[in-house]
Length: 164
Image (cartoon, rainbow, N blue to C red; front, side, top):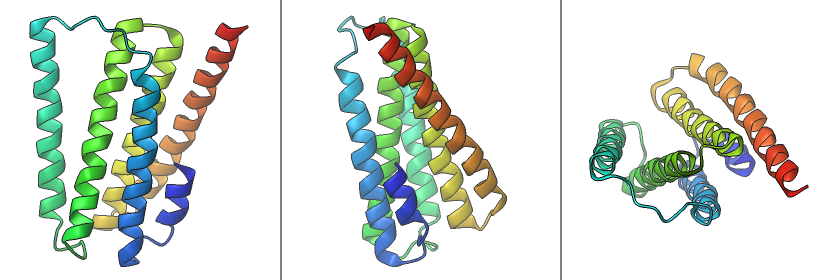
């Protein structure tokens, strides 16, 4: 995540946006793989699973509309695909993390959920700032980034506490 934010410093360079997206996709995929190992195999109730899929579908539609509507701000089709893939992976990780929390309902799962969602919201703030010139979102992005790392440290501490 830190590496992606370093790349984000030069966001206006056409090749950096694709690199930024690929690094974020890789980072969120690592999160998903690490959390998939912890998810219980119990199935969700039919109504809950349907609602869960509807929410994920709506978020994917919003991501698609957002990326396609801002296509005049983006440089090329590869960049548009990279941004949509980034949002798809982010939404999938949010769904997986939510399932992990609902399965375990522990303090460490809550910390992991907060950390993940805060990092996703930092990406959303960065996207709004860079794509629409809404520079106030840069301040919100930094605050959410700090809070995300705070919850990551809470998660790491609670995990170490369990191992002891």
